[in-house]
Length: 420
Image 1: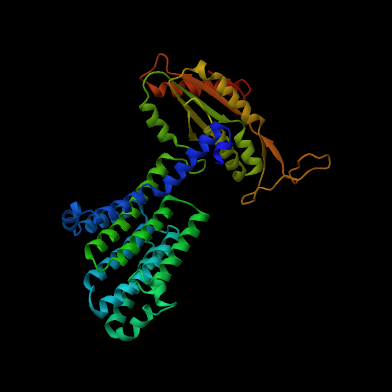
Image 2: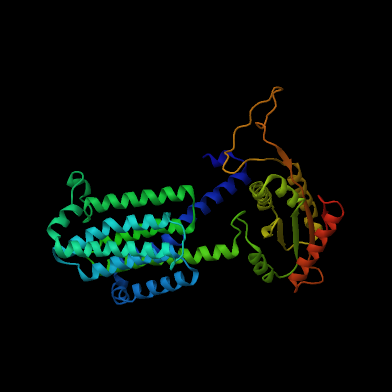
């Protein structure tokens, strides 16, 4: 209902943004876990899943460790070690009092370990910090094994201790202490995502859900193996996605990076236009106000470029330079839009804010106008050079070079202008 009250184009963009935002929490992690759940509940796949289950963890954990070593992802190593140790321990002690103790103890430690790993920073695998972290995980396994061997009668009541009335946890075979550990682990991961959202962090939340389903289904070995291995697969896929984003997306502005532009140009057919945009006097701005303000300026310019219409796609080219690719258009068709973009940036007043300083509602000045609390305001301008593919449809790099030369003509002519 609220979207219908908005102007139609804005309402459509808002709805599309909401759909994309929701999908980003479901894809691909939710699809992977959904596929695991579906495979275990479809009669037609029962035999295939049972035959595949012994090989699934071998493939996933081997791939995961190889990727972690290749990209030096210590957090992935730690998470995989935690999951692998749980699966290894449960495979050997599924029955009897010892098996039940190992199962409940693993259910206490695994969610807390996953949450701790998610909140850690990357410190390398074979560094002193990395080896200490792995040693802590192995020490936990040693502690569980020692308790199961020497004092099982004393250790079992601890992990099976009832915190609330038994009927409150009637729907799961897990004891109340493991359930509390999963709630704490989920809360810590969500808190970490609130402060710093990332595909890798989101994957830890989904992996926690998969691990819960695996430990919940420990009486069914095939299901426990499928869910535990899917938790590991979710983390592996997240690392692949993060590596892709590092290569193809600019972390500061959120725009696609130069490599993405190169690939987009290689896929161009027919006519297209490339516009190169450069922030004027950016070095002087950095020298005067600092790199934090420079970063804010780049993000502001990027937000303007993201709003470009007519099918144009903005990219971060490098430094203070950006690019826009217009498929199916020549320079003449996009000239007025590029000039409006230049004017829009130049007419924006940019309030200098210190790092981590929150935006405040402008205070009214003495004459009724809005003040800025003593913070300086600056105006930023951009120079734009554009070129199209006429005469060079099969050589997109020549179009980029022509747009770059036009950009330098705009800067030589006094900046804050469009040239082609």
